[in-house]
Image (cartoon, rainbow, N blue to C red):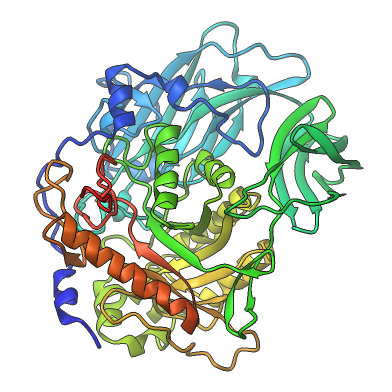
Length: 616
């Protein structure tokens, strides 16, 4: 039965122009006060799965300038740095919209955002190259070194690198970056960002929002590493390389070598299979990791792996469930948006990320659903080490403007029958679901592939969500086939929420407005049954005075205070837990933290109040 009261309470509100209250997390406050510098806040290697001994952070104070350009959508590729702009200091890696950046200025669709800074590069030998890394720039950018255009990149959530050696000169060098980001006025992937924030939409941001850094590497080197490591001890290394050579690898357990091997690279690829004796599997309760040491000519790289296997299959009771290392694992998940009041999409340091992972574990969850955002690689490394499972969403986007509320919200909320009857192929479906722009569809495919390749070596990542609530959804069956070919080792949630197309490994529903129950898979002709998951539910709201961004709040059910909030949340989690015996494979509660107007988090936006703590 549909709970009309909850439906009305969750009706989207018009965007508010009220200014967000100044909220600071403990870690952001320490950075702003100068009590901790960026080198300490972001101390570990930016890419834990491809780590070299020497690297140079380029985080810190840069300059930025906003330049009006009515043709910004095209001119970003060839625009010249402004000669007479008002340059402002900006603290990278925080976007100019984030309080920690020190700018407090939002980029508009008819503007270009310029960055610049001077740097003295490390010494580069005769057979070496200097590679510059920008781990996330939202959305499109052109990179210059000493006036030479060395690279461009499109896509706000994935890293890119550029060999800048040939543009260097002795002594001080100049970096410049031109950025364009239309936010919801474009069709690009943008996730939960909107210029007109409000409700489930958050402050749009732009520019550099993850680490900037560089490293000196051998000309012949490892470019990327893929790892397939199973609990029987079989470890397969898949490396992309530059130059000719032999890939050698060692597997170490607690510093002791347990396996080694070598293979010649061919066509820029090397595949090496190793066998680990007496294998020690990775599990959430025992997140055991093996160290990897790779060499390719003069190149030396460190990485790691966890031995584990995940799939969906019938368990001993004949019910399809998620199996980890062959054993049924009930997924107790919580939705993780990955937003912060002082850093927005950028966590104010590694300890802030670790805090969220620890908090989720302490609250009884074993899984984080990383929602419509690709997080910093350090986050996944923390989850690997701390034994927190991650279900990774692909980033959403679509046609300009807000998503079509009729087909992505109102219709599926009121009419459950529409969930498995809504096509996602053809021009009409594309228009309804915001996927009509072919450039958007191509970017989605490209970013989906890049996300899988970026994260597939992390043992904590146990599954992929392709589309969420119909936002920008198109041809989910083809998308599922493409991801399955890229990564046959993880389950796929093709359509989280609604508009199921009978594909993937889960029948995955969102249930905010009906009694929790296990529903029958609408596609009963499948040869391989799917597991049933409630991939979003809950959303109980409590705005804690002094710890909220706005006087207005958004959620699915308002609690009057700490006692009522805790009672209702625990009742909903208990009801979900009871469904395990009836065939539920797992759930995801909404959500881990408040975000701006959303006050349905288990902790406040500033991470200073745990709403489920005994003292309220």
